[in-house]
Length: 310
Image (cartoon, rainbow, N blue to C red; front, side, top):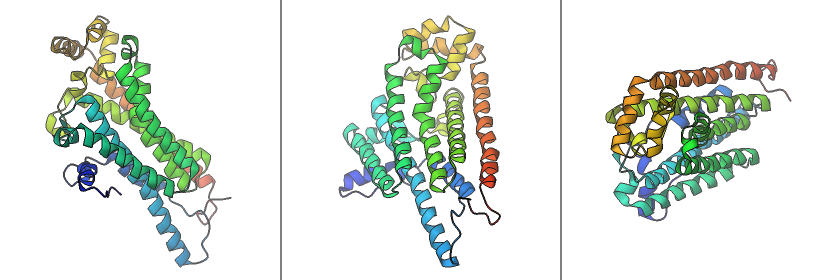
């Protein structure tokens, strides 16, 4: 999907899809598992051959959603690294560090365009709208992070909204798209959305914890990368609740080494890390709760032969 006519652009677009630097592929894995869980026959086939053809076509469409989602995610990483002036990503040199900002931005744009072409080929207006909304949310979340006021930076509600836009929206809308393409009811599709939303929030909350507790080798990025860029995440926000004086330190700017060291000192005395883990566990539980509900709803709308009722 990322083949380009210009070799340099092709090389840049494929940079984070190459063996050894492709990351965990968390999103495609979740989506393919969702597809496996919800992939049922929409109508009774006339013959086994028709069934096989239908099954193959549906699997291809569902796999396309996983590929589209990962391309959009990687495009956002390329753009984020330019905005953050990052020099590493996933344990290697970031694309902007290796090939420059211009080619990195163009590679991100190219991946988005390829994702759009593949998305259009699915010929499902609702799915197109869902994925387009997720892309809009990525831009909105990044803008919220860049332009927040002092009041907003210290708000947990603001942080969670931004986190939904930057991380959870893409996976939640993609999960819903999987449900729609498999012919599920509106109720099941909404449960798929809730699953993806809460899983995405839990994923990001744990990532925020690892930014303080992980190592460069385990994270594929420098530890404390967020706080070094002045980004306030859940552990610090919880620490502010326990130590209100920390807010003035945050307001002065965490990109200042002295302020960062002081913030880390307050964090160490607080329950910020523990409370963030607890919030992540809460969202993980909400995601888990949506799974049996999806199964129940699917059974309610299936006939004895396992086909969805009209």
